[in-house]
Every structure is written in C-alpha cells, then in structure tokens.
Length: 433
Image (cartoon, rainbow, N blue to C red; front, top):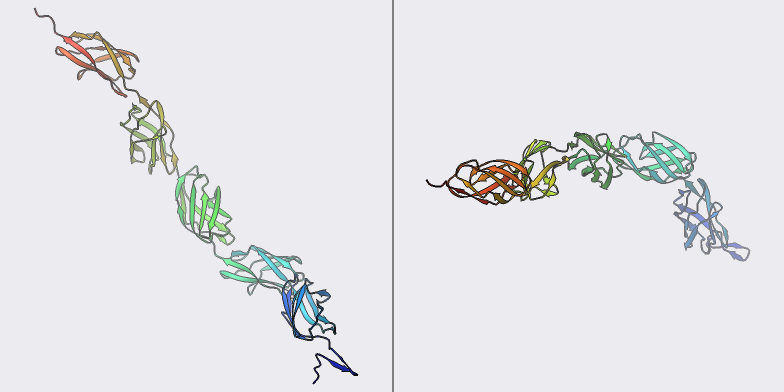
C-alpha cells in the first residue's frame, strides 16, 4: 500500500512528497524571538531549513518525520508563514504571528489607588490599542516608540497583576506589577534623642521595600538604610525640642503620622556647690540647672562621678571623684551633654612651722604659721579652739593664739582641700610669785 506522504507515483518512478506542516505551537510569540515552537506534520525527514517568513529559524531539531522543534528568530510584529524545506521541496506555510513583547515595567509596584506612571519596555509596541493591568485598562497610555510605552496605572487590589500590551498583531506576554499598601511604622527605637540629631534610630513595621524617604517631621533623615521589608535604620536629623511624627515613603505611599520621636534639649548646668574640694574626692556637691531628667552620666573632667542622684529636673547631687586642678563638670542625658561648669581640686594644706612655738596661757599672742597651700585657709585651730587669723600668702599666715590651759596643743589649718597635719604650740603658765 502506498502512502502519499512518503511517495507519489509518476509513471514508473516513486518520488518523496514535499513536507506538510499541519500544526504550529505556539502560533505566536515576541518579536524578539528566542522562544521555541513545535511544528507537527509529515515528511520532515532530512529537513534542511525552517523559515519564519523569509528568516531562517535560529536553530531547529528534526525530532521525527512528523515533528520539528525550532528556535524562533527575531521578526517584525505581524503574521509570517512558517515553512519546512527538505530534499523533496518546501511545505505549505502555516501562520505564526509576532506579537508585542513586554520585557520590563518600572516601577514594578505602586499604590492600590493607582494614578502613578509606569514605563513599559519591550518590542512591537507600534499601534498599541490597549495596555492592561490585570483585567483593568490603564487610565491612559502613550506609545513613545516601538520599544517603550508610558502608562498611568489604574486603581487595583493589593497584590500582583500581569501587565499586557495589545496591538493589531495580538496581545503580549504578561509581566508582573504589584499593587502594594502604604508602609506602616509600628515601633521606633529609641523614641527620643538630642536636638542636635546624629544618633541612629531603628524603625520597625511593614512595606519598607523600595523606601524613598524617611522623615522626622518635615525634615529628611540624614541617611537611612532599608535593612528589610520590616526594618529601616535612620540617622536622625537635627530638630527643635519637642515631638515630631516619623514617616516612611515608598512607591506605594507614605505611612500614617502616628509614631513620634521626641527631640530633647541638652541639659544646662548653672552651678556647682561647692565648686571646689579635695584632690582625694569623696565630698558631695550639688549641681543646679535644667533638663536633668534621665541623666546617664555626671563627669568631672573625663572622670565619672563616684555616684550621683537626680533629685529633680533641676538638681543633682554627686560624689566627687579624685582629681587635680580645675576641671569642667558636665551632665549627659538622652538630650545630649550639658555645658561645662568649673570645679577646682584643692591640694591639702601643709603646715611646717610655728613662730613662736610657745606663748602664755592668756589670749593675744601673735603666731606666724608657715607652710604651703595656705591661700584658701578657712579655719585655724589651737586644739579644738578656733583662732582669729590673717592669710599673708600661700605660704604664710598670722594667727592670734586663743586662751587655754598650760601645756601643748596641736595647731592645724583647714581649707577646702582638707586639714593639715599639726604643729605643736606650747602654753607656758606665768611665773609664780
């Protein structure tokens, strides 16, 4: 039995029949080509060419006498005839349509309310009659060129949709565009800081992908990093003391202004009492000023106070650490570090000699005391009894010996730096008659 697809009788000669293409799948594709089409028919053995219009397939494989797979070449939007050539001839043509192709949409997301403009890139856009986001037509669109369209995005439902372009040659592939909700900020940490800014805050929430702005009130963050869809770190800008709303803006909108950051004033120190003390420290001073709430540190120069107590927003008591010279006292709070106020460490006075070293039991004997660090002497004692005195210099003072019983007493001087070691003064009784 003869099979017409393999041979036909011409006189006494058997001649192989030309190939026949009966089905082409898919029957359309992008003008950019590159996709694979399957041809079904007969007589494909020994095929030497597969053409799409006048252009040869990029490559093809004869799977069997009834099937060929071919990589579609580039083409011009519209229909072309696909043919197969073998040693027996060229087949009939079956229609393949080059349709528009969308390769990208930018931006690839936006608000559910629509209204933003998206740019579609691809090929075969000439004569476009429709641009759709899912099943909804773009509010409007402009064919910029055969490879670009700008479209005003229609409103949609949260989630992804396929964007397609339709021309007289057919409808393109779909490329994903996502309708996304506005970002939401739920937590801000820390929620307060200095008016000078410069510290880093962490925002936690949702929808942060593609964030284009982070604002503290109306001021943009100095810088920010989108760590993930749920976290942003931002360097806080300078601001005015008080609360401001922190917001995040993405292509899908701006978060609600319901999370607040508080700019705090730096503390101000206006007094330290007493403003001087011993180099050994250990004494307690009272700091007065403003903005002391939440104090985290009190320092004397670079040395932290041994301890401190925030009595109120305007008062702190602090135990002075050891030190030397004049140092600046500062207070640090979440609002920053307060202005400097001087505190002076006073060395312990030194008493090295008394002249004369003795005198009557009655009051009135003038005694010269010599030593060092005597300028700030606040008291001179003969034993426990205070004596009148005059500071002559840092190394000398004169005192009026008080009345007392015969015998030796220890003479000391006192300054804010402490109490000196003693020198002996002897009271001599008057001679007996």
